[in-house]
Length: 544
Image (cartoon, rainbow, N blue to C red):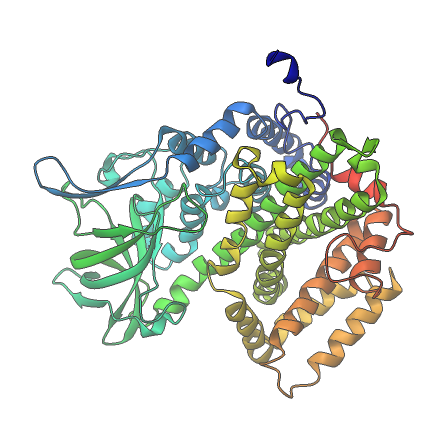
């Protein structure tokens, strides 16, 4: 009798066994737009393989296991020796290994590397976001290390290797290495100039002993770390290896692991330096300018990571609604749900399109593009990461009670969604950085206006928004208190201009109507009913 009551109907098949890359039209079209055509066939083949792996049930199981079995701190071995290690579930190592072998740390050494890596980052992040942290920092450390060519010659081949080598050994005995970062302290947070960790020069040129405590050390099982510490000349950047050349372990005492809201698979630690050996990177007192290249690259990864979370949330929502029935019809065919899905899809596509444009600017490397990045990266980091949490929450709601259950994967996405808004400078830091660029580097504003101006005349609503932005830029009264609104407008105008130039007509028209036309509410699902909502939702739905 009991068995006869347990007939399962109207449930949605799992979203697996599909190609995460090829199913993402905004990503595939954006990559084809920006990448050198000579590299396209090889890149599409590589990303299709990665996309199939990312969409597999096996990879999704790795992500689940890595989060349900978080890292464990082991301060001592069985004999009482201090070891300061973090243990990870085997799934974590499988995820990292695939990320390294897929080029997520080798952008600087291969043609089209930044665009190819950005696309791979958008794909592989959708499996599990936590393990992207060490991959991001390893990638971003390369330009900072180049300030010290002798160090770069040793470390760069290891950081850009396609081999994941997790053992704690000297770099001379490793086939690949990962790099972490330890900048912030209890008393300062984002104000790294308030750091109290001290560096005392040793007899060997360029070497120092560090003493102090770091409040956040990311990926503490990495092979080395970029660290800020004070010398008599001011904040200075250092490279701290975990294992010294003679095989002994550098003093690197892990005090505890952070118990975080999300990002559960990844370890973040408090670490104490006590006579810890370090090599200087760049000039004394120039630590912040030295490490700023790393910060800029990791901020782009924050944009990519949030765009990936948004994409996965939209994929799950549209997939669910394409199968689930309520009140006699598929959810995706019901006008109000169609409006919600279309609005989520617009936000996701705008984020992906902007992220790829930033990656293309990195690829170009010219002065105009560098100037563009100086204002566009903090603006995009501010806005895209801010939009991630409300989008994921709305996508979760599309699944109803099923979305609130851990097995759906949506709670993990929601817990992860605020991270990129905080990491590498929260919203106010990004807004103030945009103001500093506007005040000190007029070439950056010129580059932004040139970029936006390429869409002039494509949409009258966009043109009006650009005019309003120029008016606001001309009014400096109370500019700091208005900085968030200004940066939001910069990001929206930039997204609108890119979609007007490159997006399908229905996408660009809907974005401009909703974001500049004034005909929408404050929440998702309030698009003008005259738009082709069904087509927008269908464009975002992954096809199994």
